[in-house]
Length: 298
Image (cartoon, rainbow, N blue to C red; front, side, top):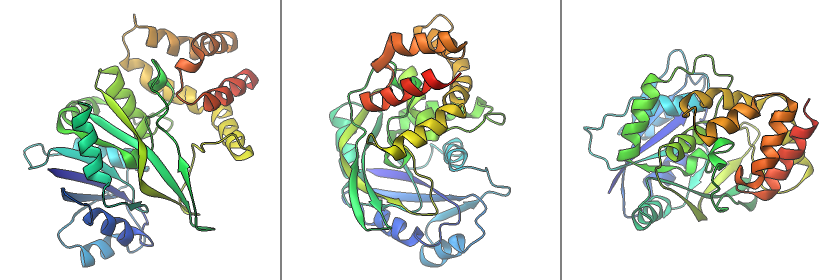
């Protein structure tokens, strides 16, 4: 099976060779990697061209401004006449274990799913420690309204969903969106269109944490989690995403009514959160932080 790897880069010279080498070391699959560079000011592009001349590199001038927009631009530019059956997202600074792609394809086929994502192994390069980032909590009826399936770097999906996603993105105007995440948007798209999503409890990626990247979604009830979630909620992170996505829901649907109430006044927002409670997020601890912080947001 051949997989098209969409690799987004920006000033990634420090780790890009390790990332690409781990992609090329995938077992039992054929990979075709395309890079979309978002205007790197370092040697990222030169390194790729020198050491991996077979890899196609597209340079964005001007840059899209975010990794999320860069990934979605690559989906828009996919040519489905090319020879590949699956698509995967890749960051520029992680390490893929050799079985990452073959395991994903087996589980997509076994579960008759169109979108695969998984747990991750956090790799804290400041102290060399590894820890699990759990994402495979049971999917809830409305979890896609407030979170993605996992980190986008774990996503593998079929050509079928990619074609529909491309058609959706071509018509999408995100120019006025106040930030968004591609992993949440793709998960939202898949679930609202009844594509089956499989979240793997295994991890086949070392998700590098370092000073140059932005890391969120800490998976334990800690002071850092509370601070991160506090900042997100108080700055309107969820309201911004809901305003982005609500236009793509049927106005007669329960999902639309949930979003509409969430965008209402303080009492409407918190009533709808507590009415649907743990159906809105897979991880109950994450939901409790989300719910309490919304009570504190006036």
